[in-house]
Image (cartoon, rainbow, N blue to C red; front, side, top):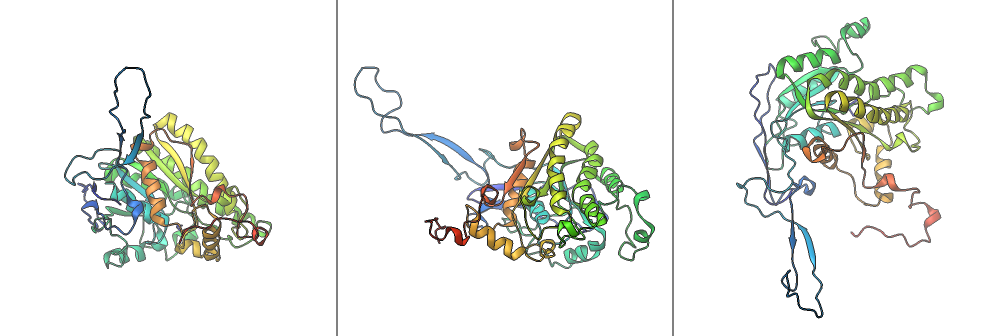
Length: 392
């Protein structure tokens, strides 16, 4: 299954107190300095200030009056050691499970980093065939550069769990998969078993992230997609989320959050994104709304999905035209820039935080605004129109 910062900001990473049989990768305090390379790591902190050309309260005598000018501006000058004022994304004391992290290139990895930077403890579920390579890369330091948080410390991954979210329980696993050499040496990797392991190890979680998808026939047009390919895409890319939330919900602390990743192909035609994958994303978005109601009423858990723009991840490259989609987005989106994984990660951190406590059942677009466009403005049809370009 393919897996698919400002002055004075300060977030502390929580150190886990539960031991793990796997290697722990430790980070310290995430301090967002002024020289951060990624501006979107900026911590939310605002304060309203009123200024005027005259004192706010004037004499009550009649006569000409001067207008009062109200100015609201973001402030970021607090001392590093002072209490966190304003509206910080503070996830200290929270624990997140991110399903679908198998390398350091995708949105799942970026979400894990943003949650860690906000103070959350990180657990990940990695597709079984990719587990050994992923853990080996972590141990050998191959991901150290991309593990860096804004203060230069390394993201901590408390534990890595083997996971294949296509299978709910051991009885669902076919014999040919059980005997497959890529699965040998791993155990307890079905959804039910992973949740049981997490419960035994940690008791509960606060945040669940679904960052996985697979369509074995994704390069085929829908008219050429087999029943097997179509149902496989639905199973791996949308029902896997239903299953994960179904099993995790009882151990998600009240007020917790669950997030998945979707794509604009759910509602717009994207030629080349085939094999039932557009249908799977449409199902995922529909399920998000239904699950928001059910999980909200039964478990007090919020459910949202992020519709992310194109990214040069390893999984996306399998589609074969990801570079063209990125170029198209850069030419036609309201914001003419390449989307970064960190921007999606930070949106996920917001949705996971108390700042989004009233947001559920929502599709949040993080795509530079491409979803709002009705036409591609780079078409020759519009060559005589004075269409503004982004300032260089």
